[in-house]
Image 1 (cartoon, helix red, strand yellow):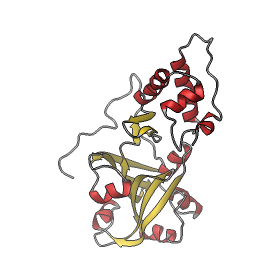
Image 2 (image 1 turned 45 degrees about the vertical axis):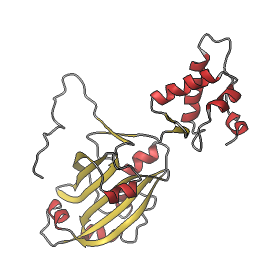
Image 3 (image 1 turned 90 degrees about the vertical axis):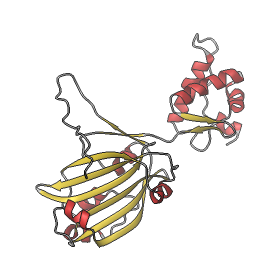
Image 4 (image 1 turned 180 degrees about the vertical axis):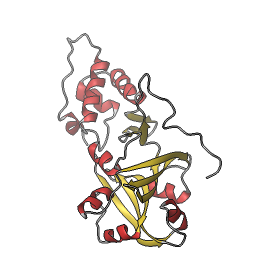
Length: 263
């Protein structure tokens, strides 16, 4: 983008306002970040001085405040870059990653890595099935606005999953598709969350550095008394946060369990 393109939609700073110019510029830049004005590129300090007619010191100070809040990142030699949206998910809810991403204003797309019948003794055991029992498997790389976000592995009983073989999961949720086909879908479940360093294969798919951590989510989904889903998801730790709400008088420890050395 050019200076003139960055200037489109910019609001004039008020020189009479007692609020310092750097603070006004910070508010203005936050507004434009929320509006998605800088998705392609964030303006340089010099471009900000031209657009808003402020000193370079004022521009640097405003941007440094955004950097401190994690909205942008300043790197020597690379300039200022907008940080991708960070997703928050409350604990204790049977959620859909698809809906979580879409409700934030980003588009969720998936690349199907593998889909069809398979034999996996661990997944069968998790589903309460005998070893060697055939199950349905769906593996996807989930994206948020084109950037890799999570690797999703789902196993289901074959009598349910075999009805999904013709489904297009490019831009739809599994639970949504189960509803559309009038198939059983989870109405309750439980989830275990572990931090981990992704494998080399997963790092390559997610596009993360070797030192970056991720979350491993293990979900059991039930429809009534029947378990119909075993899901393992590896999600980027730099873009995902789990949030727990609590209030005074609420029992503690209900959602916390000590980690066991045996799995």
